[in-house]
Image 1 (cartoon, chains in turn cyan, yellow):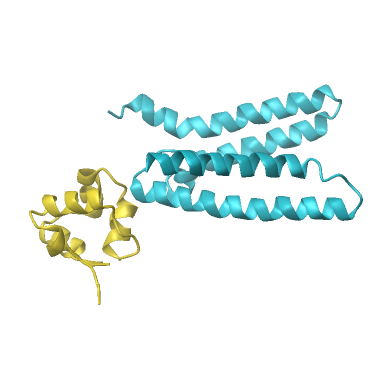
Image 2 (tube, rainbow over the protein chains, first blue to last red; image 1 turned 60 degrees about the horizontal axis):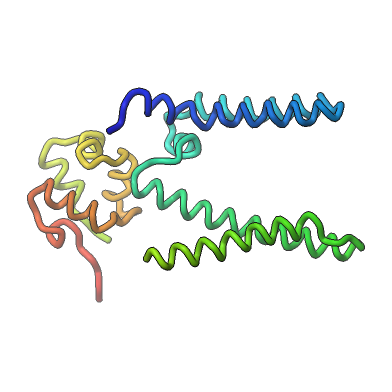
Length: 131
Length: 65
């Protein structure tokens, strides 16, 4: 059963998580003496959170701010994730190839590709068993 | 997939928001179904048909030709 608390959590959950992550990035960057970069990252996350709160009444923004939703919204989320994953895969593989061509060892592109590919294979295996 | 959801909703004097509330989906999803941009799941299609006291075949028209 949905409650007012669930609604508040749904509205504030993602923005607050973003701000907390931004603060963590800020501190991590600041510990290396790069407070300017850290504050910039925090500012980006705060701006993103504010965007979600200010325009949360619009469906696309509301879908960015919440993980739940009805079946159509979940289908849109799944398709968006699929497209994003494919674009990211192209970018990572491209980065890996370019890094090799420049004389690099392909890191950290190879690690990112391995994590993404491994997660994809594992997910397909698990979901196919569930039907 | 063509459907008669809009006609049935209007004949019942319902707004999209009211039908959405009854079905537990968003108003935008009702709009997407009515305009044929989204084909509902079997579960939602059955629930919509039952809500209007029709069969699924009477509400949704699949073009199999």
